[in-house]
Length: 313
Image (tube, rainbow, N blue to C red):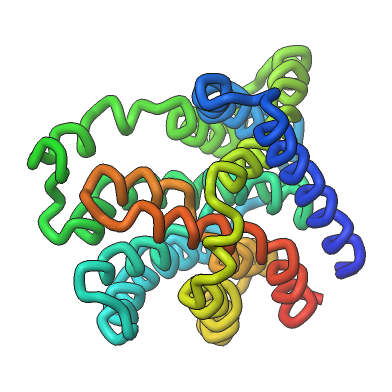
């Protein structure tokens, strides 16, 4: 694996992100268009990418089930437990510990993970990433509220009902992930034209997703982020220290090199955009969450190639 190729890919993603940032500042993208485009990516192009990559890719590449099981358990069981314990020792306000734990537990797999994995590992990584992301989504809408708020109640409604619902688990992304696993596992045939059409639609995901992240960054006061030293320390923790500390565990428990690499890069991902959404819903520091998402996303352009160079080259 050539680290210069990875660095080049990350620079390309950064430039597309910068385009989204500039277009929002220039007024070509407004909040209403951002909301519609965000739904379009989540509900149309990303599911198409997940399915299209499986239907047009090689189905002869077998997923190592023990490695996949180990990766899912590490990322959705072990990581939350360690995140919750670590947050308790951080020198932060007590009321912010749930938010910090949430940001450690949920890297940006769903939005940034797919484009980055595809850039680093190719199409064969999309199915494995979608399975892991499926597990993350189940955790996000069940364990996530409890971690963020303490009791899992909304600050606005005081109830679980808007978070844990059947509608949540019938989102296009989850349905596409399940279908991708079924098509792959049972070798279900599909007309080449349909697979190619889905792949073509899915190819829009990477540029649109990165542009949307640029828009998110453009909505945060730029100078305010750089003056907050908390973002530097927390980004160092989640994008360098945690992946480096986890590598021996991944090497021991995940024998498959592809899945091990995917798990490592997931641990090096920036904080997920959902941290901002959940912070607003559960009465936590939404501005702090936005700063963390901004800075960790910005720094991932450097930290992800660094992690690749240290452990995967």
